[in-house]
Image (cartoon, rainbow, N blue to C red; front, side, top):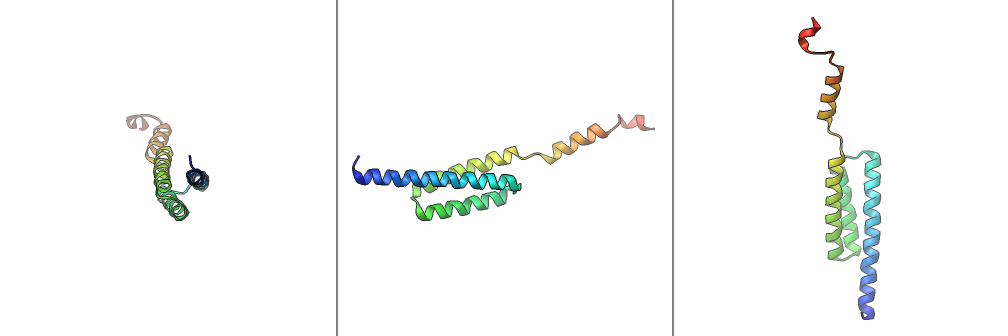
Length: 101
C-alpha cells in the first residue's frame, strides 16, 4: 500500500471505531432509560448524521445497517404486554367460570 492509502485506511478505521463506540453508547443509554423504538431510532439517526459529516459515505452506510439491525433486535427483545396480561389473568382465575357459583 502507498502512504496515502494507509492514511485513508487509518482514517476509515478510526471513524468506524468512533461510530461503533457512539452506537454502543446510544444503545446502552436508550436501553437503560427504557426509551421506545421511535426515540432510539431518532437518536441513531442523529448519530449517523453527525458521523457522516466527519466520515465517508461507505462508513455512514455501514452505520445505518448496524443501527437498523440494533433497532430490530431491540424491538424483538421488548416484552409483549398482551402475552403478560393473558398469563396474569389465567393465573388469577380460580377455575372455569361455571365453578364460581
